[in-house]
Each structure stands twice: as C-alpha cells, then as structure tokens.
Length: 269
Image 1 (cartoon, rainbow, N blue to C red):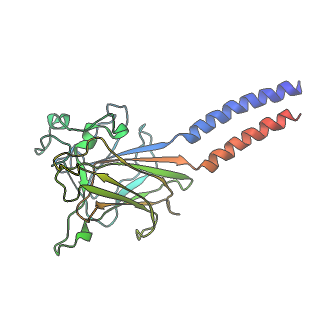
Image 2: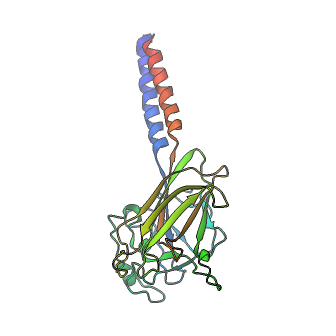
Image 3: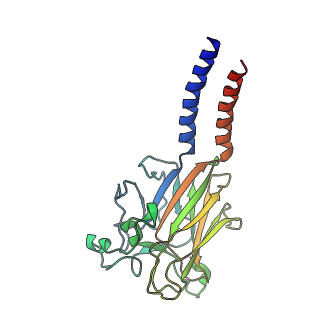
C-alpha cells in the first residue's frame, strides 16, 4: 500500500510539475507598432491582427504603462522615450501610397513578407516607422541617437528584442540597435545591425529580415535601455518590435530538481 500511495503521489506531482514547468517556460511576448492612426501618415495595427495577436500601438513622445501581451493580457511593462526626439512617418517605408491620412488601400499595398517576419509580419506594423530626429541646428549628428526605456521588467527573467526596420533611400543603409543596462548608456549588453534597405540598391527596402538581441538582463530597477541610430550616425529606423521574456534557467532547474527529489525519495522506500 505504501508503494502504491507513493506512486500515486509521484504521478500526481509529476503532472503538476509538468504543468508548472510548461507555464514557467512560457515566454511573455509583447508586440509594439511604431506609429498609429493618430500619428503623421501612420496606421495602427488591428487588435487582434490576422495572426490572432494583440499589439501596443506607439504614438511618439508618449510614455505608455502596462503594455498588453500578445494574448491581450496586461503586463507590468512600461515603455517610452528617454530624453531624445523621435518621429513617426510612413514615407519611403514599405508602404505604398502615403497620402494624409492613409487609407485601407494604402495599407493593403504595404510590401513586406508577412511569413518571413513572423509575429511582426503584419501590414499595419510594417507600414510606418519610428525615425531618428535628424541632426540639430548646428549639424551635430549625435542628435540622431534615439533612446527608449523599457521599464518594469522582471529581474528573474532575461529578455530578447526582435526588431524590424525598413526604409528606402536612407543616408545610412544600416541601422544599429544597442541595449544597455544603465541610464548613462555606457554599459552595452547587446547589439545588432540591420540593413533597412539593400546595400546596392537604395530603392529596395528591407521586407523580410529582422534583428534579434537575446539574453538581456535588466538593471536592478527592472529597466533596459534601447538605442538606435544609423551606422555612420545618420538616421536610423524602427518599424516594429517584439519583447520576449523567459525565466532564468536556474528557476526551471529548481522546479525540476524538486520533482526528481520526490521521485527518488519514493523509490528508496
């Protein structure tokens, strides 16, 4: 009877642990569309989109609290600019015609590969973009740095950013995306580059490639600091972004270890 009871306990606990590990391993995913129906020549992503996912439509200059995740559940994640200018537009992006305001037919002619871009492959999300503000009145190209804070992240998780940038006839064909974990933007923890248009033909915008920066640990306050700019200091571009957070492996190992301890403890009886 003792053996049967232990086996029953192990079986029940194994199912519970499997469910717990599955939930723990589930990534928290947040989608951000730079540009909305209210921004200049912009379009908001629909909720839900054709893939059944939910978006946070970002209007420039505003700090947003409690982004929703891909399943429309609230998160603690806050997002907004960090002391730099940022504008949104759709001109010379993947969009077709860019009249003001855009119409549904303009959005429908957006030229992106919706399959290759995965979760970011939504026409409205690719239609418009956030852009660096341009040099200041003295011609200082450092003014092109565009910075955002991603706040209220979970210190027990690491994060990945998936970034889609696309623009024709850019002064810099390549945009550099960098992530820091200090407010001075001096401690670089991840970087990636993306060709926003073809290196040989500036009329061919990026339509099927993303940049991904993984393994990002927020600072003690739960903040990641995102920066983008053109490769030589000219304007950079960012059309859409996916934020994905997963538990640290040590947390999953602790759960798995508890399950194994119970199993082996029962076998010794």
